[in-house]
Image (cartoon, rainbow, N blue to C red; front, side):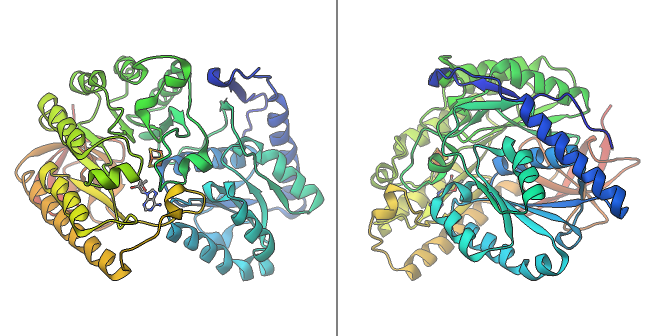
Length: 490
Ligand code: 5AD
Ligand code: SF4
């Protein structure tokens, strides 16, 4: 295995913070090298290679972070394995957006305690949960098999922390409470070759009252357009066809750099990169989605006609309590404008049910938005109070059985509408980017349309992962379409 010896991680100053941007990084690359030496020594003595497994919870940001952690571990001489049972290091990239995400992490870590004791495996915990002091305390006290903890702002220090643990065998807890810089050129081990996540903006400034994200991911920091484009060009050269631009609110891209409408400009610039066939992005905030972005979506051929536009709640009273800074009318007008500019735009959304004080009338407004817009799909959540957020102090006046009933009514309505919309694709020939064998039926291949619908299909001729094929849709359900005749393009 080859290690990039003189890789230097670049620290970028965030213009808004006026930081001096001192380049500390040769040290970080040296830590990689130090651990790599330890790994080689281990292999020399035992004939074995150290192994790792990463368990990711939560959103695409975490998926992307896990690719960086996998890249670092690979550079440090570790080999990725598919199961916890084979690993020396099990890394948990955690999420705290809802309580059940946290409970699952504790459950998994607890379940591994025997494994760790018997086999000497160790757990590394990182990600959003670790930015909360009460979580770190609990892990210190009750989960002794967790040996290294770091937060969302100091992922790049992992090699140093691992070196410290391996040489001193003392548990290492290092969580930075703030990030004022962006670290470029960290190693990355991409999960897929044909498609990739690309971060464009980190953090969030919106402080929706229910949301923990701004508290654990910090304020908005945009990567420079130059760095983003360089990464996408390199991906294209490596055979990547589809990129998804990531940010908690991609519409704010560039605001902290003093730029206006930089996101739309970025989309036009990506149009010029040969090899990239599809561009997606998430997430968009309805209060910030600009006319210039709608124009860009209509004009850029590579931008897929799918927009994830969370509305969270239909009632203006609840939207205000959520600090969302728009009204139901604004959201519906925005959808009208988008549909006028891009008639075949597929919309998906996030919805929260049972925000404190939500009445039946408020909930009816949510159902009304679902009926009026017609979402292809929706991520629907029951409100979960998060310690440290303003909404957590509000009294919950609605009984949990009522919230469950509302949730079920919403899911039923969305499933009915989603199925109706899906049926419209029957008989159509759609472009699919192949992801590999289908999970639902291993004899079929699976991939996504430009509108992000999942398609399972039987291929004609030689078709493989990463190919763009035309598929005729023969049957449609709410969650996936069935197709035939997947033929490779041109
Ligand atoms: N409770 C329930 N859902 C939440 N989300 C964020 N915070 C909470 C919470 N406290 C949902 C929102 C957001 C999605 C990523 O998670 O719908 O858009
Ligand atoms: Fe959370 Fe709101 Fe920021 Fe989205 S926009 S990450 S919901 S605070």
